[in-house]
Image (cartoon, rainbow, N blue to C red):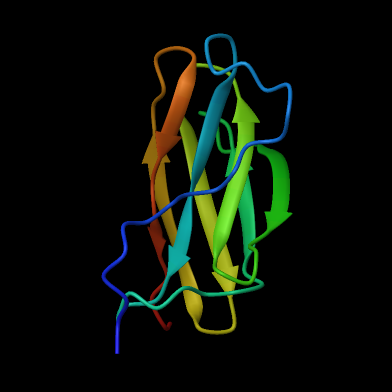
Length: 103
């Protein structure tokens, strides 16, 4: 049974100024919308160059601090892979979920 409580999102570390920082955050999900824990989440720049990697939390959450521009967020997991493109245009929190598809 699904809980109907609103998604709280991730707590940001103390000292993060969302007026100045560009934060890319979201969840890795499978095609049923189930969070994928432990997925490797990569941040690629506009030319496809690897920039950073984090491991999704137990609830599938990821977070990167980036600069405005165009980024690809790619998730790699045992349940499949997926990617999305995000284009933050300034400081703030940009939430984007990544759905992985079995290949």
